[in-house]
Length: 607
Image (cartoon, one colour):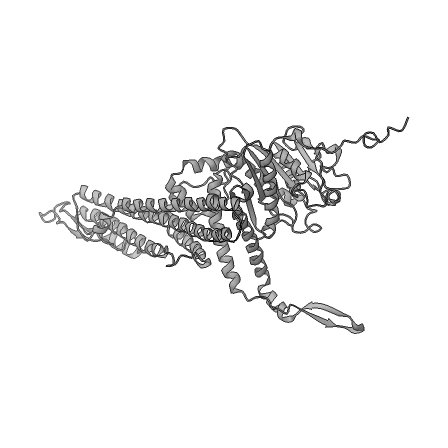
């Protein structure tokens, strides 16, 4: 890049273009939200039939287009700002060098050369003449630098050395600008969509590639922005986000959506936006990778016949060879995609029976996966309920846990008296994979407890209502154990605690759970084996569990059976939880409290 081009470069023109793309991104995001949460939601709430389903399918495709436009335009905006920032830095260096040269009596030529005046002590009755120098390779070549320094020391005119310095500074600035131009040009050219109206898996996979490209080129720009607090509290995160400009917020969401989506304390709508980008990118990349893996052989099983007429069922050699090569990755991709699709199905249910919009407050497909899904905006809700699922919970099985909180939202909303409710599925920890092998260990609970406490604190930091929300935490099975660990290792930021099918919560009484007396609740369904099983698994025969009278929990009436029925529609178990969630504990139906002689009235015949 030549000197005239860099001098004429106007960063503001690119910054204005970036503002324009950011505005388009915002409008596309608003259009997507309107389609998903108003238009489609209204159709689901009022209409049924083939025509309604066809319209919803078309609207879903349109929403995908807007989401893709939102994401890509956000990247273009950030890339333009990054390019403008790099070029502005180079231009400032050039202008400073030119100004210093002119102040020293030198003249800068159109080619970047520097002419210096005569000066120095007279030699043979003459003042050493001036001259012209150009940038050298001294800044990058040690040998050239040594030769140049020697020449400067030997030159009789002191202005020669000054001119060399100015020329090199000008050369460095021009080189920096040329490198920025060469770096950003291909990144900006890559931000171009296919010439069609369908957003494919390949398009979304390219978004991740575009993100990586812009992020790599824009490292200097991103590093110049205010950085998230290192190991910051939710309040620290909230303060950091609040102080960012709109441009800076857009840059963080477009380049680091995975990081922004994990930050407890920042607005739920922002976390949702960031995590949905990660969700769509992951779904596309995983689907493309899955498509590239050969399908498992159809002849998976065969029989080996032994003596006595018996036969053993075994995998075929062909299937074993495939499984050794692809099995583990194939299973991870398949399970992750199943969970991702179930999360999307929840998004697509918004409006059904008045169901509010969903917010994706956390997402990762790594290992067993993580997902945090809210029904309704927690930041504006009068009542929040955070549900922690138990053993075997992972991304693949997220549907059932999401549906439980959908059922709870419907009951709580009906009993709320017009107040707003948000029910949240929090799969933000590595749950035990198996009952016998893993659930007997408390390490899963203690490892997940800090993240849970931080999430609860984040709900408080991001809440925008006039009054603090009423917050209930609900633990099912091993999820109740994690809640107990969270109370042990920190302060449980909750008003009520509900346990269902608890095997033990690592504390010996309700008074150790950081809530006021009378605000710990427990449900144990008929034929649920887990509470008694937990005595030997998570402690010893003397372990106290929430179902024990001595624990001090309110024992809620249940009319469900087994370990997973506590959220069955139209059940007393679900109704009682809903009443707790909306702060109507006085209306909860409790189990009768029996004395040493059995139920009241059972000994009336004894005189």
